[in-house]
Length: 405
Image (cartoon, rainbow, N blue to C red; front, top):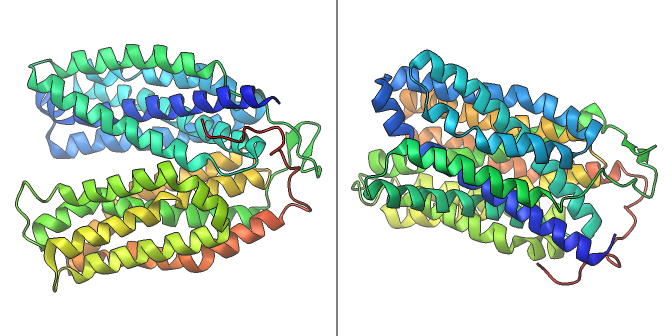
C-alpha cells in the first residue's frame, strides 16, 4: 500500500474519531434540558442512561462479528454514519417511554461506531508499523471538548437544545460519511500466518481474559476521575462551585495532550514499559488525590489528577494496539470495548456504595489498586499477547509514510 493511501486513511480515522467525540460531547450537554422537559427526575433519567449503556454493550458483540465478516470500513461507513444521525432521536422523544426506546436505538449506534473505529485504527497502525493509535483517542477528546464549547455558546444565545442536537446529528452524519471514504478495506494477511485465508485466528481465551482485565482496570481508573474528581473536590476538599469542576478538567486536559503527543513516546519505550510507567503515574496521581484530604488541599489534588490523566492517556491505546498486533479479530476488539464500557458502568456503583459506607477518600482506593494491577500485570499481559505470534509482523515501515499527518 502506498504512503499516500495510508496518509489518507489516517486522516479519515482522525476525522471519524473527532466527529464521534463531538457527537458524544453534544449529547450530555442536553441532559438537563431533556430531564426538565419530560419531568423525569433523577431515577428515571438515570434509567435512560443505563439503557443506553446496556444497548451499547449488546451491540458491540454484533459489531465485532460484522467487522470480521464484512470489514471495519463497511461497518464504519454505514453503521457509524447512521449512529451520528441518531443523535436527534432522544432529543425529540415526546415521553419517558419513547425516550427509553430511543435510548436503545442510540446505544446500539454507539456500540457499532466504537468497535468499528477501534478495529480500523489498530489495522491502520499495523500497516504503519509504528504507534499511531493514541492520537486518534486524543482527537476523540478534542471533538468532545469542542461540542461542549459549542453547546455553551448556542445555549447562551437562546438556541433550543433540540435545534442543537438535530443540527449536530445532520452535520455530523454528513462529515462522518465523508471521512469514511479513504478508510482501509479488509485486513491484510499477517506475514507469519496468523491470518489464514484472509481470516484472523482467534487469540486464546486465557490471553484474551488477561487483556480484558487490564482494559477493565484502565477504564475504571479513567472513570474514577470522570465520575468522582469534581465531587471529591467539592465534598472532601470543600472547593467552591467555581473551583470544583476544574478537577476533572485538569485530568481531561492532561490526558488529551498526552494522547496527542504520546505515540512517539510509546514507540520509544515499547508497550511493556509504557504500561509500567503509565500505571505508576496513575497510581501516584491517585495517591496524591487521596493525600490531599489530609494536607495540600486543591493544589495537591489537581497535581494528582494531572498525573492520573497523563498515566491514563496511553493505557487503552496500548492494549488495543497489542490486541491488533497479536492478530486479534473484530470480535476480540469488541470484547475489549465491552470491558471498558462495563468499567464505566460499574464505577459509579462500586465507588459510590463504598463511599457511602466509608467516605469518598477511602473509596478512591479502588481505582488506586487497579492502577497498581496495571503497572504490575500490564507488561506481562502485553508480553504474552505479542508472544502469541510466532514471529513479529512483517515490517511495513518501508511502505508507510515517514512523517506524521
